[in-house]
Image (cartoon, rainbow, N blue to C red):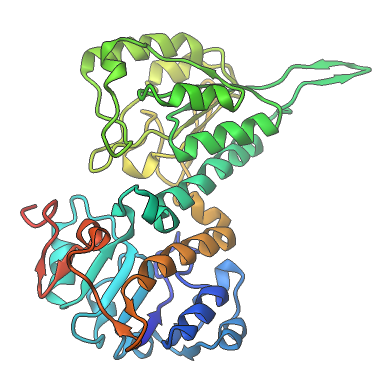
Length: 378
């Protein structure tokens, strides 16, 4: 069994899909691992470290994937980059499948089995494979650091001989994995933290971290969570009530971090231009949803926007990737944990069980067709 780890080609992607630790484990399972030269450079991993762990180094992507039974990647590979892989090879990556029917057709025509790691079900068995959680956790942490770097004042309250410095007021919008880590990090830095989310279960989580919860707690709010633990899209009426509640609150905040995402849909607009205009000069907004359209009306992907009233709106791309070494370490473990379930320990070959609930949830293509029911008729 040959496992390929190509270098990422996206200019904003510094992560790599394997580490010396996971390479060593894969070799221990009987696999031959081939890593493209320089694949780990931006994650602080040298080719020599991969070789020491048991991998071979290939000069380019074609040599890396040639004859591969498995391809491990961070972002969805192009069909051209998969030329030469074995028929039916498993390709594990963050596939970003929503609205990408043409790209998925290309993977189907490449006759690979494409697995979208972000579709991993949130069940106990799959926790160690949950890339959304591992990467969002880091994004929430980094968002607070990015906000602190842009904010021109100290975060914690400081009592000095020259006077008292008040603590920064920090508001987290969206309390998933990223939001919870943002709350914890902001609290550790000494900020006065409040948070909001449409899911009622998050109230207790927010308060357990020492932050104050803010939401319109009506009947719709009580039903605002899917069975999978995700936020539902709220009605226009609820959004209006929530906007009115948060508008006055945002005007008093020094830092606002937005993390709200709904799978398969554009990010909900939570902060209007008028809300931004109400904020004090020097305030900072970090929009973690900017790649999905943004939670802030004025956010721009890949930019730090400075408004006329001197509010900074941070729209960094791939925020987890801004901690590339740590992100790669966790992501590679997610991949290994999932791939291990598809390796026959006796024959040391790839063996995909089509009846496995993890396979059913994540496999997008197989046998030359798009097979995932959520995307087959897109």
